[in-house]
Amino acid sequence: MSTCSTVSRDLDEPVSGTAPVARTWLLLEQPGPWGAKALTSSHLDPVLGRALEAAAKGTGVRVALIRRPGRHADRGAPDERRVYAAHTVPGNVWLHSAALTDPRRLLDLDLAALGRGDDRTFDSALEGGPHLGDPLALVCTNGKRDRCCALLGRPLAAELAASGAGDVWEVTHLGGHRFSPTVLVLPDGYAYGRVRAHTVKEVLGGAREGRVVTDGCRGNSAWERPGQAAELAVRAAVGEDAAQALRVVRTDGAAPRWEVTLAHRDGRRWRVSVAQGASAPPRPESCGASVLGSPARVRVTAVRELSVTAALAG
Image 1 (cartoon, rainbow, N blue to C red):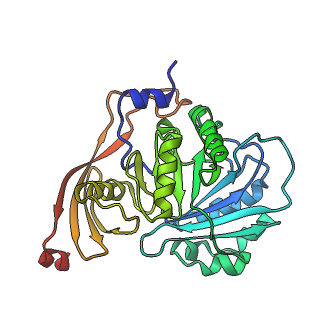
Image 2 (image 1 turned 180 degrees about the horizontal axis):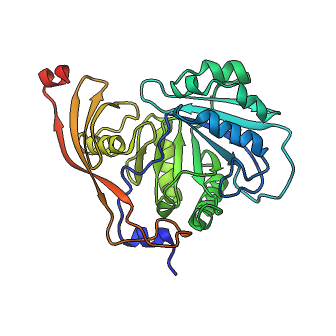
């Protein structure tokens, strides 16, 4: 039986507008095995995992577990863990890190403030500071959620780590199993699907220079999915690759049709028409799905640059 990622690739399913949505990512190092719902099914205290899930609801913060690529022996808790927070909204993009011996200190964070892009709560609560190293490459590898993530993600993470491509981690969940292998790059927040090692190396090289590689890009996690698709369409239309050049300033409408307004840091604005439809023919949305589905897909139908008068009015 074909895997969900093989079927998606064979059907040439578009990846644009499929990135996970989070203004801020909170990442905790947790070695060892992960279950399907890793925050409550790993060696992390499940009481802490449930508390973090509850605290993050409605804040724009997404909590995930990370580990270094390689073998994951069933060992006890590490003496020290890395923890990262990354805010992905253009104009206030940052990545901070800290070292923890007690992960329960994460409950001292003001997650609502973190979701708004305030890094002070992270630094004060965890004695953290700006991450001065390479951008993070997070490869989804959790085979308990979908076997494609393990079959395709783990070899990619291992290859990237062995090549010295950058600061590579495995991560518990990025959504879109059928686009495996999937990668998220922080702090800019762009997600990628169906990537190979050479593409990720190009993406990381661009990220170090403040550029976005759009090949295989699913979108920026800072935006809802219509905004993700709209931003990538404007980038394609005007040849813009600066990571923080574009910002979604307004989204009007509701499924299945939206009008998304984007602003460039130089003052230009665009209005982008986005439509949602069902993917056909039906396909497995994950390898564990018992029935075929028709996942929603978004597509851009028009990109219009606004005049100065219209931009000021909008």
